[in-house]
Amino acid sequence: MSNSNNGSCSTCVHFGDGVPNEQLVQIRVNGSSDGNILGGCDLPSNAALHLKVSPISSCDAYQSLKAA
Image 1 (spheres, rainbow, N blue to C red):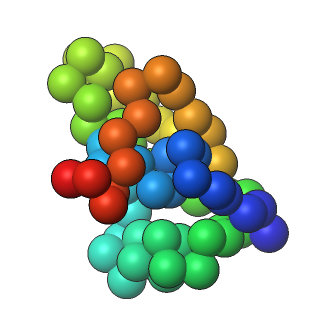
Image 2: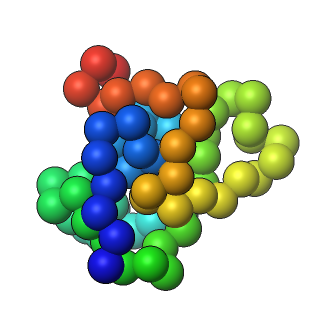
C-alpha cells in the first residue's frame, strides 16, 4: 500500500487517464493505493508520450485538484 500526499500525482488534475473512475475516487479520497496502479498523465506537454505514472509520482507541472 502506497500513501500519497499533496504534490503527488494522485492529487493532480492531470492524473487518472485509464484508471477506473471508482478506483480513482478511492485513491483521491483515501490518499492510498496498491502499488500496481498506473494512470495516464493528461498534461498537454506529455500527451504525445502517453506517459503512465503511479499515484505517488510527482513532477514540476503539478496542479492541485482543489485549485482546478
